View 1 (spheres, rainbow, N blue to C red):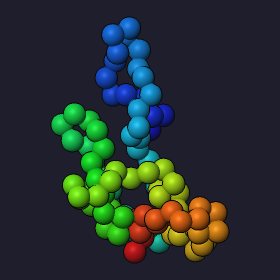
View 2: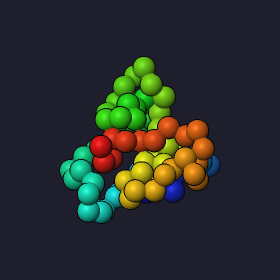
View 3: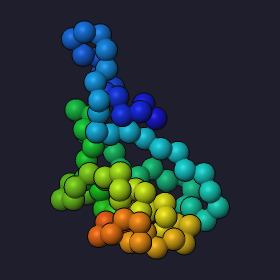
View 4: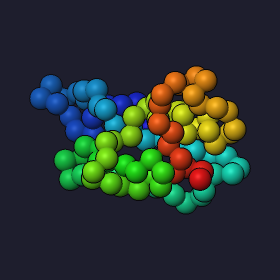
Length: 94
């Protein structure tokens, strides 16, 4: 992960905060070899279908709370107890 830093340098040669990042998940029970979500040519996150994890331009980009809810769900924890009313990213396991 780039710790939510932009992939491009700014005018001062530094990197600004960025709303997109990456994660590598390693665990039994997860569907292996899967890439979830993507960016467009401008390196902005595209919409994602939370049930499949695949790009869907009619949906919103993945939010961090949906990702965490998906991790909780994947290990059998009721994500609603910790993140009420947050849609679960089911594409990482279901």
